[in-house]
Length: 529
Image (cartoon, rainbow, N blue to C red; front, side, top):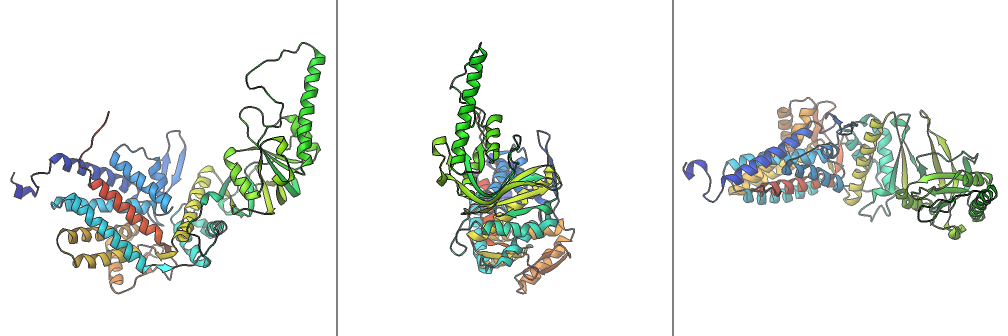
């Protein structure tokens, strides 16, 4: 072989080439696995997990996180979708499809003999230019403009399994996030952990509601005949046990005398009654008891005394839920009976059991909290576990879209419009350059068109015709021209209100480019046993 024929330089070892090719093929295989689930007409995936559980979803990050991927380069694409999920929350499928398209472009560029480092630096340059173009064509949005927020959330939900419930879920997503934003004008981030999703089987997704207050996912304890509704509630959250004390180590007490046994029971009764009196004295009429591992958090006797005192009891509060409950109700957890004072209590207008329609379960609902914290609760309903789980993921994605708009208050057109516009402007930019850079940036621009191409393909349209029509309209200056999958034609996305946050697209382009450059720079695979 002569050097002129193969286009290889003398220093390049063939192993580096083989490793790179193997990495690109493995990563492209992962991208093609989720490609069919892109867009409103994308297919869903039915996944059977190792424990026999079944999962139905078309969320890119969820599909990839459940895949058992062995190849290290393919794992990078799984982590890429998770990074996008953390950063923007939406666009997890797009980012993987885009990375696959860029890797495809790399294959042809490498075959031309362009050095991987030259491709990587040109791609990073193209990515910066693409983000600049996106920022220029974006439209600013005000968090007070609820309609714009709703449109972007509806666009996000249109591709989910629960798309038919968009009219209900979109306002819930918007209102739940806006309810926890500190200052709509100045805030640059929002913590979605302040929104609690309580899942209850029974009914349909249409029964889902946003609760201004708190919902606990199981009903109150009524074994001892205590109340199940309480007005003007004063709520105490107990972190200690309402049961007889135990020693630190295991021990057995052998009682051989009835009188002694009677005395032990009397002492135990007296001890528990004393604790219940302290709670009553503090003015509390609703008691939440945290779960305990070491000994019983409560026993029948303590429930009996609390019921006699007319106190509503909710047991088995998870340790992880305590901070959220305290923030919502404005109460302080009580770790010892001596601390049980009035200033530690939270207040609410009404606390009571609510029977879930369509199911036989009950939840405890707290409404009219006196000094509520910045928290929200969403009560999610569904006919089976699969529906509830998918509704929960979809609602979280929708909330992430609103969070993206809090972080970066700008919207761009959806339906492949933004990608086509960026591709057009990048191609024009590539014309002004010379040498390898022009080649690589041209290839980057063509890769961006894979998103509208895939959207059209999944909608059963003729992708080549659609992408050509898109290019034509964008060249004529229609910046909002995108794919209307419902009518199978090219339409103005702004007039159809198909919009998405700027952050979703900029983050997808940045993350995909970085991952592709990282895969390009690898020339050897070392297995450390």
